[in-house]
Image (cartoon, rainbow, N blue to C red; front, side, top):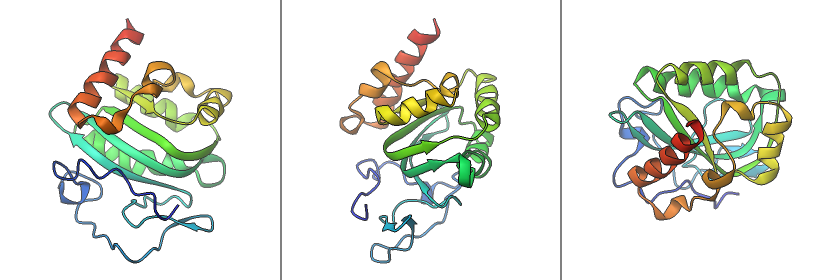
Length: 190
C-alpha cells in the first residue's frame, strides 16, 4: 500500500495545502517518511490524516464557484470501531460546506471495506447538501463495498452504482469529471 499515491495529475491546478479555504491548508508532506498506516501497512505520505485510524483522504480538487470537491480515499472505512463518518463530517466536510462546497465526489477505488454503525451523520450530510441542491456521489468503489453500504441502509444518502461507478475519471480534468457526474445525478433526480 505504501506505493499507492493519491492522484497527482491535477496538482498543477490545485493543491489542498495551498488553498486557504481547505482544511489541509499549510500542511507539509515528506516524500521519505512513512508515518501513517492502515493496520500494519504503511501508506504513501501524500495521503491526509483526518483523525481516523484506518481511513485517509486527499482533496484532489475544490471549485468554490461551482461548489464541488473531488476527494480520493484509501483504507478501511470503519464507522463501527472508529466512527470515521463523524470525523470526516465534522473535521473535513463541515469545513468545506462552510466555504460553499455542497457537491462531493468521493473516489473509493482504494477503499478496502466498510463497517457500519448508525446513519445519523450520513442523514445529516444528506439533509445539509440537499438544502443547496447538492449531493454526494461515490465513484469507483468496489462492488462489495457498495453492497456493504446497501446492507447498512445508507445507500439512499449517496449517488452510487451504475454509470457513476463506471467513469474512467483519471483521463478527465476536474471540470469534465464534475460535468459527467452532474449529468448522471440530474438524470437520476428527474
